[in-house]
Length: 212
Image (cartoon, rainbow, N blue to C red; front, top):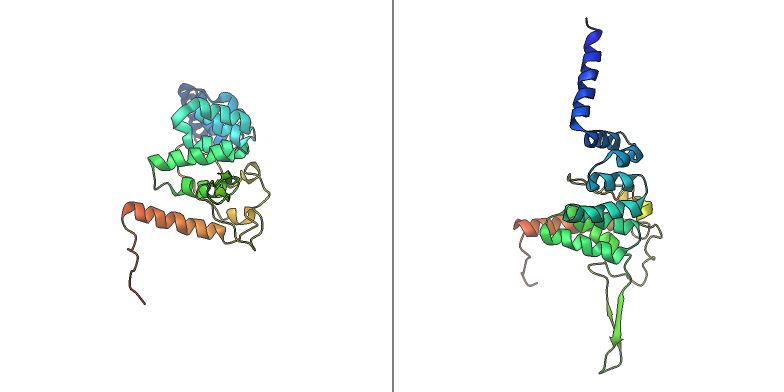
């Protein structure tokens, strides 16, 4: 009798999965680390896009996230970054932050991707003839003695930059290994994001204005 109990549980699990449909199998396959199978089973564009992203098919993942529309705004930002379309990726992260200014993950990733966006050079000033330059949005200004940005593409950083299906994604220590130009960038951006979150919630300490 005891030997039959495990088989009964397995049979019940299989029956429940069959009743739930292919979507349940897709999520199970994604959790098991077989995104290729998950992509074929998924019946909704968000799950399919995440599976394709994990499988390394960023173009197809981007198509799926575009099909999903607003439900995949954050994930679309990730796929655009993986495709090297950094300016569009920053715009999508900005859209996420417009809806939720406390989203520390979106703010962190936005700041990272912005470092890959080339500055916008304006036309010469009509008064003094000096060309106007607009920096990439919210990107850290490069110092003269600073090394150039990491040559890794966002696609190569996919192990630490992942799409999400609704749950929060925490930036990991692996960021340190992908940002060779500034080992302290991870800590800097996390502190900046946390400070911004506290300010948005109204719990940040007010700035001191004591004159020295």
